[in-house]
Image 1 (cartoon, rainbow, N blue to C red):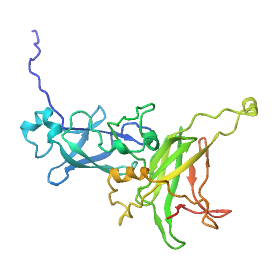
Image 2 (cartoon, one colour; image 1 turned 180 degrees about the vertical axis):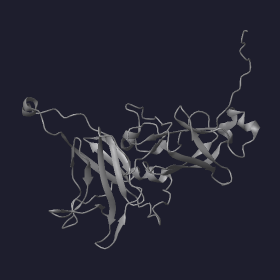
Image 3 (cartoon, helix red, strand yellow; image 1 turned 120 degrees about the vertical axis):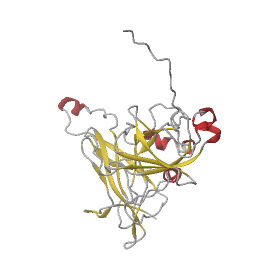
Image 4 (cartoon, helix red, strand yellow; image 1 turned 90 degrees about the vertical axis):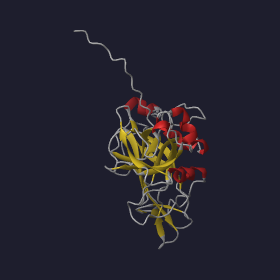
Length: 302
C-alpha cells in the first residue's frame, strides 16, 4: 500500500514568544520558571506562558483576542496593547522580574525599553561585538545569592545597605552592581529584596606571567577589579516575597551616577577602591568597621 502525504497544512500564529537568558552568561533559562502575563488594564485577561524545546516561552492564545485578529498577524502591530509580565523562579536560583511589553507580537518579543539604556554598563547582557543599536530579543534574569554558579566563573557577593547613620541602616533593594576590569564592564548583578547580591561572570583574560612566574609557575592568579553600585532607592519591600519594581525602573538606575560605597565606616569614610579577584575564590565586598574588623555589609552613602 502506498501512503499518500496529506495536502492539508495548518499554520498556527503564536502571539507571544519570550526568550529569557541568565544575566551571568546569556544562556537561555528554559526550566523552573513560572511566567505569566496579564492585560495592563484588564486583569481578567491573564494567562501563563509555557516553555518550548526551542527555548522560548509561549502561549497559543491571548484571552479576549478575536479569532479574526489572531489569524491576521499583519494587523498585530497596530492592534497591540500593553501587557504586564511576571517571571518567578520556583527554585529561587534567579531573582523575580516584572516588565511590560505590547502583545500580540510577531517573532520574538523585544522589550521596548532597550533603546535608552547605557550600552557600556549593560555590556555583559549583550553578545560580544553587538552593534550600537542592537536590541536583544530576550530578557535577562539575574542570579540570586543561592544560585549554583560554575567553578569556572567568578563569583562576587555583597550585602548592600545605605548607612544614613549608625542606627539608621536600610537595605539597598533592587540595586544594580557592575564589575569592571580596566575600562570594560565584565559582570552585572542585582540585589534582592534584602539587599543581597551575587554577581557571576566569566573571568577576565589571564594576565601575562612575570618572568619568575613563567619559569617557576604561579600559585594563584589575581585581577584588580572595580565595583560600581547604581541605586536610586526603589523602596524597601514590606515582605521578602514582595514583587520587584518594573524592569524599566531597575535598569533606569544605570543612567544615574554610581553610589559611593564606603571602604570604612570610620573617619572620613573614603570610597571603596579596587578589589582583588583571585582565580577560583569567591570575593565578598564589605566595608570595614575598623582596620582589623569587617562589617557584614557593603555600606553606601545616602
